[in-house]
Image 1 (spheres, rainbow, N blue to C red):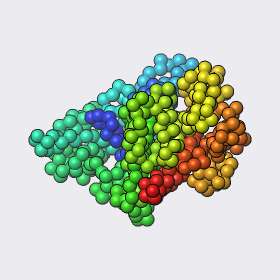
Image 2 (cartoon, helix red, strand yellow; image 1 turned 180 degrees about the vertical axis):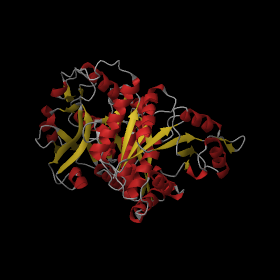
Image 3 (cartoon, helix red, strand yellow; image 1 turned 30 degrees about the vertical axis):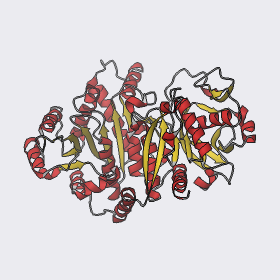
Image 4 (cartoon, helix red, strand yellow; image 1 turned 120 degrees about the vertical axis):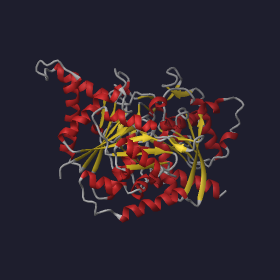
Length: 537
């Protein structure tokens, strides 16, 4: 079957949830038995988002193949329950790099290289190559940013050109503000945004309306009049109790059948089993029988998008265990204040220190780890959280007072965490860390790690530049630290544990592979122990 093309555009403003709309359409297609893949375009001139500040861009999501991509790929994978690849991420940086490289090699035969047709041609070539190589039934292309942005204008032009060659279904996402004073949903911003889309030469087939309240029928009628889109092709995208309900909500709105028919597919094979499985899982998310409190002690808590996968992994584990997981974001620097007596942490049934870079807030995280170990509060350290777990143990159990990571203090006496030797002469920062999926061997069957994974060889995704210093391995083990997992060649430490209570740190980022039906094993173990911490005291 020839690949069908769908383009999802954002109108009016960013941050409305194009990734969730795209993911919901992907999952709906999966419900109907079709193989669908996403492509995401981001207009920034970075080659990828690996060097971006999480406070500005949100989480950097890492794929198995080492690609550092936009956080929307995490949403795609979680909804599709499928591993994706880096070629599905197209950025302005990749496009311009490719064009300049091709020009330097004489690839344009003396032409003066221009946005049209050369850059748009590069975009079309990449998209068609993906369609030809991966042969999905449907390719859904999400255009980052907002129609009218300079950054994505050339890409939107390429989508117009694609529609000249292929049948393309355009889905436009807009926002309907509700003004309490007048008591109505205002359509004027959407009308203006729709004209902006039409000015690009694109006429959307579907208009998805993001709103805090349900989109009224009279609102749809008014929008239909001004946009020339059929009323039943104007779709409600009102806030739901969980983002995982969105595909079911769209099906309830009748969007699925209209969409399947519009792109020319057979809509007779809707899987009732998959829908029932999702409904049952959502029921456990929305109406659980248990409830616990988890603290995430981090340095980017001002923008929780920086820890999206951690949050979702906790939701997945809670759904599996029929437990509501209340998450509090604790600013690490707050735990560095001398007057702090850890009252702030005493209400939690579990503590997580996630990944991060730089020395800000480090001592606060170490204080949180010390509190967790001494109070036997279940603890999970992820990447940086594992490294700080080792430093805390070295300082407070092994009595190596001047212990640290060379990331924070290059001249420290006891370099418990240090730069990987292979990274010390790296010229560039981008894509130079230990990235992607790596095998790991669990060495001890009586460990938290083995009880969590129930096998000795596992694979998790990584994103880090510093490692546990093997010089201290024997000494710390003699003082009770458990090194429960290493790389298969035993060269690098992958997981460490406490012997007393539940405390484990992993150099990997297990949250990146967590799925709604298959929660990350270490998160699942943390929630199990947090439940026991609360209910079995």
